[in-house]
View 1 (cartoon, rainbow, N blue to C red):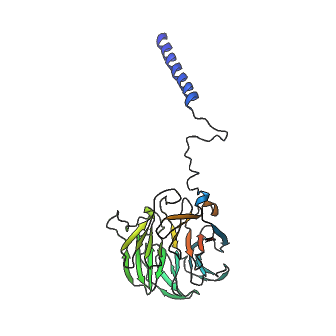
View 2 (view 1 turned 90 degrees about the vertical axis):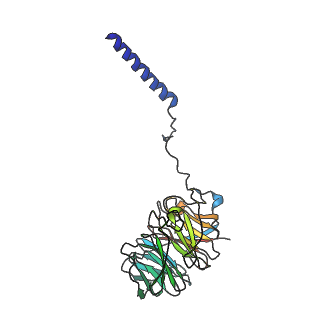
View 3 (view 1 turned 180 degrees about the vertical axis):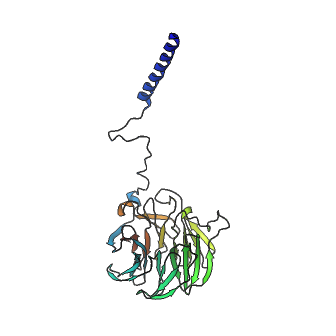
Length: 321
């Protein structure tokens, strides 16, 4: 019995000795900040090198809203911003000139030919530029959630993030066409939307661009809904898009280049008309932590207006040529 006890004690001593030696020789060294060397270092992800920034002029305006949601500009560079169950109007100098109440907060805005189009979750209403009601369309489905609008001539494109489809309507509310496919999930015109970010815009050739956010792509369609092309790379590098659903918003400049915004890794970037990355306008340092939903509008002076919802701040960028 004593022999067995001694054997057990000897084995236990050997095991303890190996643990001590292993701890001494293999355990990681901690620096003076007591950082865990096994932790995932992600601080560098999303950082933008100085060489990748555009040369920009920058200013910002604090908006008198608790939370701003959507932005649009007209041909005279007046700015329309929705939030707090109203739409406010800013002059081209950034001063508030007017506001009007809405039943709920508009989820998307766009300005057509002297008409302000506003989406209210599952319906679209048309106003004069002064805010007087013109027409109220019949609701989309009860579950519809409109996230973006685009206008060309007498047609309005409506993106419904719930159905993951884009609808083309006449100005009087008649449905003309549905864009997007449910038949083949592998096709680029099958929109994958992990969350309610689903932007649309009209290019200067009158074609339609749609953000296929789950695929990290912008997809181009002609006016009849035929897919023409697409671009976008999945990457955390500055030239690409990553996360669940990016680019969250985009707009098109007068030369056909694209301005995009992202959530998660918060960035605003410029791509040329072929979708090639050119430079970054802003990184996280311009915005509050965890900023999302950075809606974008571009005025006739090619000033880039970036609306930060939770901070109710309008960031204004001008690329210096």
